[in-house]
Image 1 (tube, helix red, strand yellow):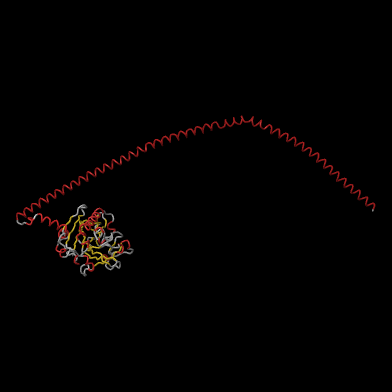
Image 2 (cartoon, rainbow, N blue to C red; image 1 turned 120 degrees about the vertical axis):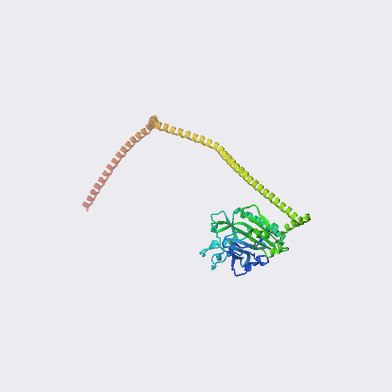
Length: 449
């Protein structure tokens, strides 16, 4: 596969299940993790008593090796071999409980969020998430696709971490893979150099981070890069020997200088081209060396002056563009505020007119109410007086009818009384006659008997 296949370095891991093993000092090298080093030989010259060897694993599969400093609470270096389809970083931050408590029964690589019961002396020999609180730094893996293991992370600013990840990614895809059989036999060691700056007086902030690459196939060669944390934009490409001398105090990263110390193929091609173009460059002698010395001095002076000019130009550009941006922001803010005020004027005028009209309507309503209240009693009285003749005239026929009805009722009552008296007298007479007749007839029958 080509580099377009997005191959990346070892560090693949399912993050919350990362395992590890603290390698005892009695064991040789990194034990089962020696395979991540060129010719299975770990770097030489890192003999500080505070250094602890960790073999990082996942599901029993070895992933990478880490030399951790319990004094600075950051990794000295981590070593990886190349693998395809490595997983990206992410997930919970993991710790190594056995760094602080050798007798701990917890799995190494435990997520700090999963700790429910206290671990004795937790944080004494390693950094914890809480150590980064209230600071401008965040924990960042030495390689951007590494798992979130705090034993493999150093405190970096967000901008530096993003730039370092981009630089390493570009280096792997464009410089390492095309010249190393797409990753076969490629060994990487990534490390950090601690500074005197510490977060909360505990975790050292690196003064520089570095990467050393060794390719053993098809031809052995090596190269290194250095990035100072104070310079986000620049990166120095050096040989492994220069890296060892500048940052590591002469420590040896690769056995046999990675096949004799040959440089990157691109550098060899440039060197061969220069040699072919100027065969007299191999000339020797005091005069030639003196000329070389003068040329180097002039070159360094010119280089320093150009760097100074470039620095001043950048500072001036930053100052000018910063002021321009500030002026632009102020002008746009003023224009937006002015437009907002101007657009609100018609609305405010209409609102004022509406309020005036509503006020006039309320005044007229109150005046009408007062007038009606004043005119209410006389108007009703006049209305009643005016309607009295009408109601009087209209009542005469009804009164006449009521009188006639009353007279008729009197006559009808009298007639009824006369007939009632007559009927009553007749009834009394009939009753008396019938009684007399019955008595008379009854006595006659008695005499006859």
